[in-house]
Length: 202
Image 1 (tube, rainbow, N blue to C red):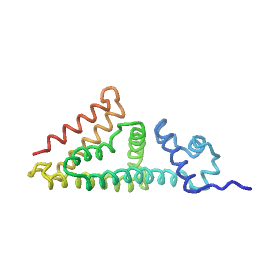
Image 2 (image 1 turned 90 degrees about the horizontal axis):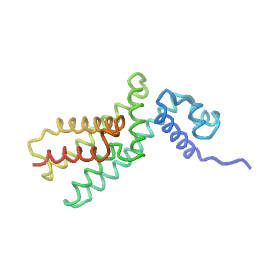
Image 3 (image 1 turned 180 degrees about the vertical axis):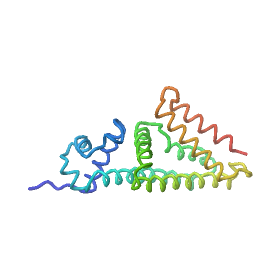
Image 4 (image 1 turned 45 degrees about the vertical axis):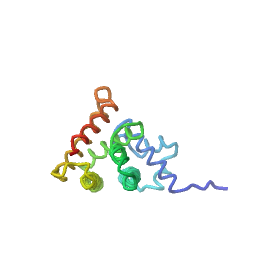
């Protein structure tokens, strides 16, 4: 009797293999053959689910966005339903999802950096990168607006400016922690983020 393969699960396996190859060896290394080898399947199986290299990479990038967005939304829901005393801590945890503070997030940041660089010259990835960046800014703007409404952010703070400052801080911390983990350890990343948020308080 032929083995029944769940298409959704198999695509997820291929995506995970794609992430692993990119994180270890860079974007250019994520060929169909390398991904197939990493997933432990033959290249024909990869081609069964993805028509080519471009479709695989586009699907993988979209999957990354979906995974991270799902976790962020769960944190947003937690902040919204929390009492006043818990919201500051939960807001920090929400923002920490965007930083390489454990092995999973470190892999995600490494892969996202590779995707972002590749998107500069690949239109099909550029659209996803642009939408993701806009979504991140909307989320952070919403977080800051909510802080301001509950008195946790200075009333005279310009939300647009502070959104860009916080996005730039997160980008910089992510890059530093990824490329120079000894110089920018996880404890320092958390400390810098917390210090920045404290400076925004009234």
